[in-house]
Length: 449
Image (cartoon, rainbow, N blue to C red; front, side, top):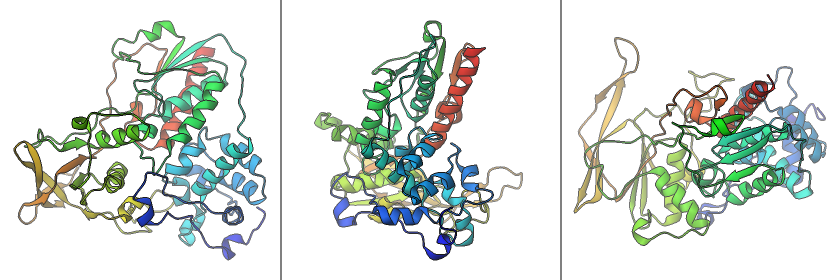
């Protein structure tokens, strides 16, 4: 801890976003970066606490006090080594992680100005790639082969660890490129896909094999007989639907229909005119108040929408920074305003969708009902009660962003392991990475025995 008084003398400084009038016209990353002097100053605020709750809160077990101290001292290579020891892909989490560690930071409890761990993490990793600190490993092979199904964050993390342990790893994925939701769900304005490609080059060079556009039957998993072990990391491919009258109208889409297509278009893939899902010139309604819904808002703005409204069936979260129901060091379930929300959006809570309305087969609006939630006298989930009269929200495009269904799996052979969202249901990228690493350790232990 090079400067024990830094947290008293230096305030939290975030890099912030590009100006709205500039960023909504392209899909470049919206987040800016601090210069080296400012970044080191932010790292100096880390207090090296006796009990580092940041370490406790991080699913990967990252150790911010160690790499923040190295960053403050100017040893960027050591900072990356310490960071990469627990996090295989810090360039991903440094951009899109909600930073559970920051909410658990002592400075968040005392001043609501936690250390900028996530931004520090991104800066450290960019310096590592820029200065050549990211080295390629060529582990000695142990003669055993492992198949990983799914090239999303969990699958890549599992493949990375198993490869470094000496296994010959082959990754199968149904898409045309690796990344899973990192590539096909998260917009480029949050994560430029060149960042994924850069890491993929390292994984290729380290000997991991990839087979894309692979149709793997999980119900009859023949790979279990061809490999010593199989890791299933297929995520949660089924989105939660809203089966109300009018669902068949043209203009009602799942969130990933527009998000994945837009990312593919930016990657040079062409679609037929009648296949394109676009918000251009339309009133857009996003149903679902989470991060996926926020990504739809930002995408709609960049496509040239007329307006965006986001509705959520649950009550409005408390306005932070504190959440009485989830006190520090737990993650506060407070109102989150993203860069996409700042670009313009009407947000409403306690809204239940009743019917999609259309004309000549095309969507024109959604009939909704304001509701309240009352305690259930029998316990369990609160009861929904209507409030006021139904109304119609005008919309030519509806994007369903209500989450994903946890997949069900058959009984697999003993040499098959399930990880990430495929095992636990939809969650954070950082939790998927942690699950991938934990599963790799289980596979290693199983094969050694």
